[in-house]
Structure formats: structure tokens, C-alpha cells
Image (cartoon, rainbow, N blue to C red):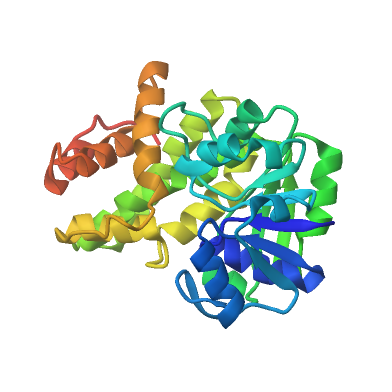
Length: 320
């Protein structure tokens, strides 16, 4: 399988490093200076310092060179995916495109597989998602992910081609469930970070994770996902990691909110845009999403953390 990774952020670089264990990989960087720096130093010092780039990994800023390979892993932020697909449509058309981003597009309410299908109908879309940090993957630490694809034959080929010595992939045909699991857990992670940042304790975090998982299922099932998908790596697994580690940018944003600190606006936090997209979509669907509503209120400065907690704790008592 000929492979390129489109996007030289931390996660894209980590995937490229791991996949070179199976053969040559091309890594595409948007910036020429960034690509040249990586070629010269054999390190992505800007995004993933401390991890050497293997000899089998080549770096380019020419999308046409990267697109010479048939399977392309799209490791770009969710809110920039459509722009990449539209502006580089000539190079990406007809390829196997594996989205490696998590979120819901703010402008359309679609997940990454749906955005690929809409922008490039002749491409073959799939999704790689699950509990993973770039540093762990680049260091060769064991990581399990979900490979979601509606085409079972393609899914089996990708599962074989993308599994490495430290990456174990589980196959799923439920692309909707995998998309929503990876997207919605980021919203809950912001809430959990805020709780910990405000000093409200681990018990409160556990309660938010549990009720957040119920909220994730509520939306996913309403949109046709399977419950077992949300119980797997792309749902519960990713939720557990993201809500309990400062390695998560979403959790760190929540920490900053809870502590009353300023968060670096240059850091991409997928859960912020996703929370707003989910609130808009579920409002139209008349779904009850109280944690998501509170996160949007916190992000937009409409109410304080105390007000958010009061709103959650004074909801009517009911059966679990």
C-alpha cells in the first residue's frame, strides 16, 4: 500500500513515523519552510519535537508529489478539511482518503467522512479515530484505534495496510458512530477540564464523564449510529483518555476556563467548534444536550462556571 500523510502537525507526523515501519511514507506540509526544516533536521521541531524522522519518511510541500500515492491520510483540523478538499481537488480526486480529524463541521453539521463524500464523490472515504496522543504513537507505544469505512473490502485492506507494530486497528462499518464518538468526546473533555480547573474534584469529573457519555449516545443513536460503536474505542475509549489527561488540548482549554486563565488562541481545539455545531444541530432535532449547552455558554461567555454547575445540578431528578 502506497501511503502519504497530508498534514504535518503533531498527529500527522506521528502517524507517518509509525507507518514507516511498513515501508516508505510521504509527509506533506503546507509550508515550504516547514517542509525544508524537517528535511534538513529530520525532526518536526515545531509540532512534534524529540522524535526523529526515519529515513523511509520523505517530506514535501508539493501536494502533487504526495498524491502520487493511492492512500492518503488527511491529518488536518476538522474545520480546515473542506478547504483542503476543495482547493486540492485535482490532486485528491479518486484517491482513498482516510480522515484523521475529529469533529463536526461548524458550517454544515457534517462529520469528516460526510464532508469527503460531499466534496469528492469519486474518492473512497474512511476514518481513523480513537484514543491516541501523538507523542505516544511517535514513541512506538501501544495504541488501539478504530478504522471506520462503509466499504468492507476497503476497510479490510486499510486495516492490514495501516496496522503497525504499535498501532492496532479495529474495523467498523459504522462511520456515523465513529465520527460522532470522536467529535462529542471533545465537548465533554472541555467540561471535565473546567471542573478540575475549578477544583470541583474527581467525583464531579466522573459524573460529567458518565452523563456526557449518555449525551453522546443520545445524539449518535438519533442520527443512526450503533450503540456498540459508542461503547468502543472511538467513543468510550476516546472519552476516557481525553477527559483524564492534560495531553488533551480540549481538556487543557477546560482547565483554563475553570481556573479563569487565558488560553492560547493559536492552539487548535476541535471541541470548541464542535460544541457550537452540536448545539445548533441538536436544537433543530429537539435533543436534550445539557452538558453541550453549558460548554457553549462557557465558551461564549454567556454564563459563569458556577451558573453552569447550578444549571446541571438543579435539573429535575429522574431515573438513570
